[in-house]
Image (cartoon, rainbow, N blue to C red; front, side):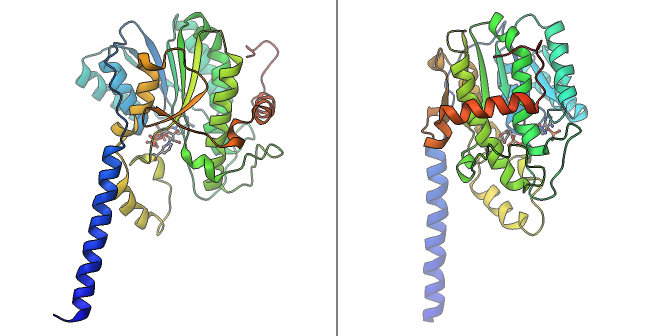
Length: 324
Ligand SMILES: NC(=O)c1ccc[n+]([C@@H]2O[C@H](COP(=O)([O-])OP(=O)(O)OC[C@H]3O[C@@H](n4cnc5c(N)ncnc54)[C@H](OP(=O)(O)O)[C@@H]3O)[C@@H](O)[C@H]2O)c1
């Protein structure tokens, strides 16, 4: 056998061992929600529940007996997902409602609907998120699309539902952030960068999620409403659908090789929504169903206060809207 072939075999073996080690690492570090808590009699709202992590979260909470409100912008895929969940869990109390988080009007219409029809809200899961690599877009409200969907919409929605959440206490808010926030800097001098690079703004919006979660927790202290944020892991979901050719080719290998399934990615959201372990815990960040550390910048209360005040202006919070 030539030395070249031998080198090739050794290299192949090393690569295979590396892949196996990474897969084993992913498997053994996977956080699973072990709670068997029933959600009978509880009402939850999950944004973006028609696909990926949100759909799996809706499925699990429906299986536990919750009334699940799937807040989605695409009603066709939402109804399809709802039918699958009802069929698999036997829980008929799964409903679809229209919500486009990139539109402040849609957020207000959805909140009005909820406040007029729902008397108790136990868990609000801010799951929906969008990511684009190129092609910046501005919403009808003049907001940058990624920031509008991932931060400003959820910020306004939280305000409009806070009365209901407080009346339903103990209640929980769960915010799906991302570890990718560590790649970003939250520029408070330009919180609405309409000419910004969308891929980078995804990281910024996830930074905003984490900072918002902590400030919200501080403001809700003693109210019986807890707020926690999480990173779901790197998940094989629709969030990667906008990565263009040819960048999507190596990404596909990574996704299929190393990323977790949406059901695995939903575990920490489910844990924070149902588990007795986190009763009364607020303002924390979780990965794999365990508390995780945040960067100093993301924990800075002055940054959080400024982000809050600026966000109130960008979403056009009115005097007679609930203030937190
Ligand atoms: N996948 C990962 O590796 C990963 C890692 C870290 C964090 N996350 C976060 O996990 C969350 C869930 O994402 P996913 O991975 O499950 O991706 P996904 O399958 O693409 O799900 C995202 C959901 O958000 C919805 N959405 C997007 N824009 C919306 C809008 N304007 N109004 C209402 N809903 C909207 C989508 O609805 P449509 O079907 O209508 O587009 C979809 O249901 C996101 O917040 C994401 O940032 C994901």
